[in-house]
Length: 497
Image (tube, rainbow, N blue to C red):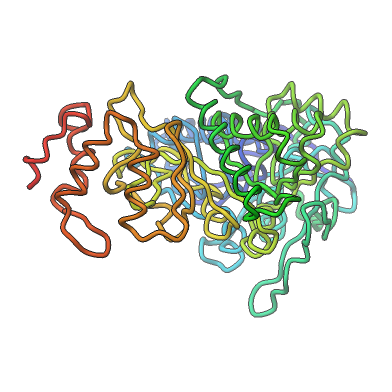
């Protein structure tokens, strides 16, 4: 079949007000860049004419500035799910301009298939190659492509020459059956392959191919500082201790790590600690630190949904694909984050929190309970099903004005029932096997900053007795004090009695 090569502007004209668009990618890796930018320009033109123009957006995870950013600025998004990190999009959500649905990443594709979110009108898929018989070879991410490609009425392909065709063969494309016919996901070790290396579609659904040469909008993270270095060392020390006492097998277990500078610091510390054997990862994203450890022989294999790496790092992978071909595999998000597989493999999860309360509930997404910072992403997929779930964060923020350890979190993403270990630069709180009061004692003693220890102990003294002691009039006093006085340390408990 001969394909129709079109411009990004021509592709954008195929999309109508009220349509729902499914996008490839997972983080800025592998997502649409050209057509979405053209769609934003079209929305602005329609708005200038006085015409409504907004679309729904379904993605694998966050995207980049040329998608979430430009579409949010153009007021072209009515609805969006799931995870996102873009600052312009965040501002629009918090201003009430966009209906944002923060879905667990492992559930996004299946909720589309179940019909929970409406139909998919157009799928925009970035590829490094497409064949006349409808085989689409993806770039640096898996995301929700198998599902949106099958459900969409039409498919637009961004054929991006910035991605090497060396990526062909690195994907493992598998879409599970829906209930009541679903079978087990037959992955028994991170390197197992269970699907195809391409996404197969009906060529007649491909409405056009847009040729591009646009690098991923990858972001680099700040260099480790003494705080993140200490957090990383504390995580490594904890894992070594659990290996030494036989809690973790001596052969070790697969790791999952979230995104960001703390995650990079943790992985670097694990790589340096030779007590921990070379290990595997079953995770949702691979960052630069993982690639460095693969080169050093400290990480044997990585199963992932995306290469969330800098462009220099990605190019080095493409240039050395003979080395990396047996080092990683890229899967769709409902497989990379699949709860069944995570629990069966015994994955150790390592994620970051905005704040953790004294009983172990973690807030990953909201500032003072109302302002969305980032979505939950895949942290819930892994935390709830992990062999050991670890949350880490600096003990304070904003020069000590904000404590990350609080009496009660202002928003709950991960409940006390799922959080095993809390780690800050101050130390390690092991919550396993502890009652709520014992958890509070461990978190305050080992994780709270010295400026806040007495404040938190005072709260415990005034809390109403019960299985989980709280004084409801004071539970959010630190947050209230921050909003009124700009510094949690200025709390006066007498104001909340």
